[in-house]
Length: 192
Image 1 (cartoon, one colour):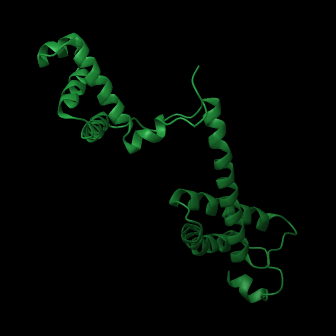
Image 2 (image 1 turned 90 degrees about the vertical axis):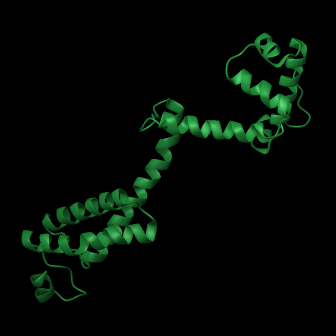
Image 3 (image 1 turned 180 degrees about the horizontal axis):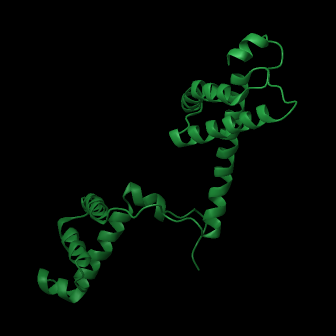
């Protein structure tokens, strides 16, 4: 860095850097690049470090090649890091639809089954708040795995009555705002 500052003025091309000067430049500019990418572009730490590393490698290769002159090394690595970050983001946007279409997308980790069961249970309880008490009892017994005949025996009702409560309960749940948008049909289309 000293040689670069002493031997070259700001407007002239930078002098070739030695390995020690490259290390000093890297130590000074790398953390700035990472912070800059994270603050300005919202990059994650990994994305910012990856782009900064690529920019520094590119800069080192250009400094090592004969005849290559870079006027503003800090500006060059900032621009290169931005370029590498933006290109990687574009690749990621294109990659995801291809992976989904090709069936290559795999979950990174298994969800916690206890947490999922708890969340599912809370969601079902919230849905059951929209039905009458008898419909709620019938739906709970269905979720426990009882047949219509077993439910009728337990609630002292006829099979037909249980079927009707079950149908009415399902219809009321379908009117819930979360489910209504999933079950609504477009006007004018009829099923054959």
